[in-house]
Image 1 (cartoon, rainbow, N blue to C red):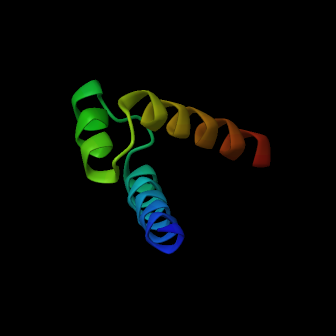
Image 2: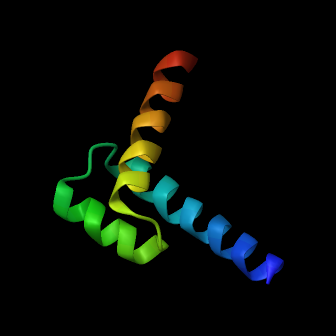
Length: 60
């Protein structure tokens, strides 16, 4: 079981990263779709984007 969940996490991250590069501010509806596509909760998706935006700002 370990490997499949690892690969899945990696795929989820790629989906989120790809989305972020086009649109760092997804709407609530888009977050729901992303949550379904990645297997995360909408809260986790929101937090990922929030953390990612903070990291990007900190890097400037």
